[in-house]
Length: 261
Image 1 (spheres, rainbow, N blue to C red):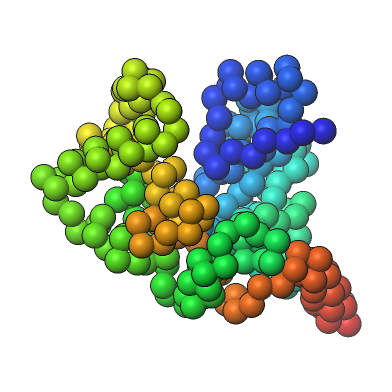
Image 2: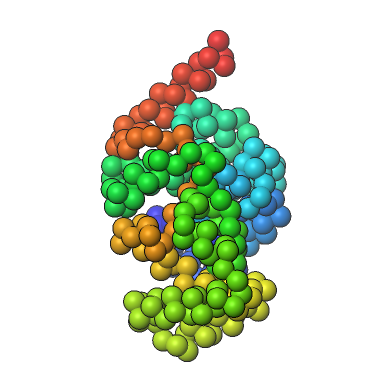
């Protein structure tokens, strides 16, 4: 059965439309109250992502968030843990906290099958556990990325210079996607009402997908961003997905045997 996974919370109406089309819905949450609301709205599962996670993320560590979400909605819907998971020991820890499994973004990004350009993967492998930063300068929402000169420029830009730069980037994004000016304006006004963004943050939010695409698809890290969880700092190779899964299962089995012995 098809499944859609949201980085943020979908609307109640969107969940209903997905279900009407035979599609399961699994949003990512960063707080207990968000999980409770999503369960009330009828989602089929949730991913509880702690602050260690990459991309848009919250402030609660996985070790605190995951048990809270399990206590709130576990047993009603499946709960997956995310944020810092990369091996079998982490899988066992998540199961001990009551989760049904784990979701791993950065770990699967750094595999041989990942379509991210190889030279970009190498940049990820060079990062340490202290080389990521959570910034609001990209689109107004907290987002964990690898610190780069691009991110530093975005964070240090003044309001006077940030808006023109964001507008130029948004126009390039519009040309790339074929989005009409009217659609951009309507989406922007809706985001401004719902998220309390400044105008520069609003334009950057519309532009953010292009920044991610520039790096992860086009292979141009000098103009894009590198979303990454803190776990990137303990990853130093590019296994196949098959080898990674086998290693995770072997590590988990060994860890359980040690705990039970």
